[in-house]
Length: 471
Image (cartoon, rainbow, N blue to C red; front, side):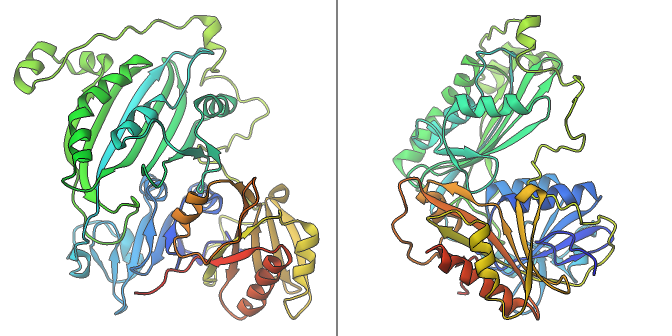
């Protein structure tokens, strides 16, 4: 039997990977990030297929768009549409067909917005010195929503670390000259969903910041305050870096900042910052811009880095001695050395997604004890240096794939990504262990679910089905 392309893949076609999900919220977890990386290496695009109840986090949607993937929505009548544009589709493969089309009437059903959202972005240039700190721009943008800083950051969702610019910068520095993409989140009181991408260039260290920020209920005083502060917020970016360009747009939408497969308002421009390099490159006259658009002209001093400073953030041209030449900006955390990118088409496996929340870390003893619950002899193998545990039958049919657990100290992160989770026990002081569990649908499903349930029970944990409640 050919090894599966990926635990989340239902089928692999000539040009794309078909991924079915029933998750209420699809986030950029380690498995999802690894799927994007593996698909890109194989020259394939990801096509996510869901029903109308699924929502995408901003982090997942961004990566899906950046990799030219598609979101296909299957409605209750069995019709297909593009979840972002609403274009009607004849079938799943039609999602990759270019050109205009009729917009689904179901897509035009407007949701009642409960939050004014500011959509922000900035491109900044830093000196490659030991004093450089990434993340200040995210703090500046967080102020639009009334926060002093974002709530946390991490390489994937859910984020694992509380906000700390020093730790974040040290992590990005340790990976240079490779690019690093990080996920940034807010708090329930101050919603924020964004990303930070850092890369080494000949001019220094470039930081790309994006985000969606909840600034308040439409028409509220908080929204008025955010609009009034937008220009000063952009100017504040100049204090710690050389901005190339920065933008703020506004729209109304959901308070949780996720995307549902329905029409939403296009963002409208609020403020624009054009940095000195772009002003020179575009040949703009600051005086003319001030007279015509009310622009504010300012001066930003950017000193040149010394050769010693440049060694702190290694040059992008530096040879990556001892590094994997295929390393990507989205880290591959679940690479399967047995998978084959040229496997053509494989029978649909319909992964069923769970999250195990447990006070104790799953380990080999718990895995082997749970394996006895399958109703037939099973084997356990560890892939990618122990990042994946695979239960399978003697015929090598997959039963359960378990990702390496991560410690999650933020209860709000659990609520954000598992909004319909059952009541949880009181977490230990250091938080729950979050373990992604995938069970393929089909003849082996019952045995796979039995193993997952037994694993949760052995750890006094809770197995959360990520499927969206209908209605």
